Length: 298
Image (cartoon, rainbow, N blue to C red):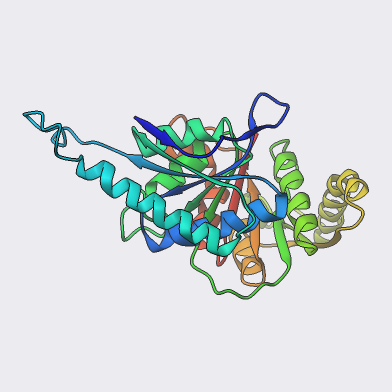
């Protein structure tokens, strides 16, 4: 079942739609996600679609039909959407907003929405996640499966730091993350901090093997500089700061996130199911960052 309002998204010329989608469930985390999505829609001058998923369990279907009695799950879903729409309009009155009430599984529905959206925005918990988890299971699964950017909004203060952090490595999967990060930095009129954390191989600590640490460090700096060169040319208005040092990538990005508005990571996980598709670094950053995280899959 689907109920949508307004005239729908605007085609983006690539077979998809130029719209930002945010998933809501009535939680405080979802409300923060709506505010983040409304702000990004304003920056990008794009419409915002707010989606609530009605997931029915095996015992949610009544034994006898009662057509005159409204479906409690649908009624609650409409209330959730109305409140989320009010939040979005109060945050950014000029942004065009439409809503969708859809039956299905949250992961499946949001993955389908991602195929038609510029990005998907979710709260860090709620939407079926376990309360004790740092990041809800739905957010992790959508980030691991959806094509394109998935932004997971973590609880943070209202301070604007005007800095975007992006993880840089030598894999092809880094390119979509760089494209998204440079665009976010440009839209925000802020600085882009490119973080590359490198580690010596395990056998580097064997006494019979010699490593020139200075040479390794120079090579890592050169790799980052080469990787960023083309993007610097396309986004000349963006100031780029390079942070290249020996550390675990999750620790380096987590530390950088304390001074950022957004952390952007690519994903090169090769698993077949669940969060394994994220890769260990993306998954670790999702759980430990101190600001919203965008996972950008090819």
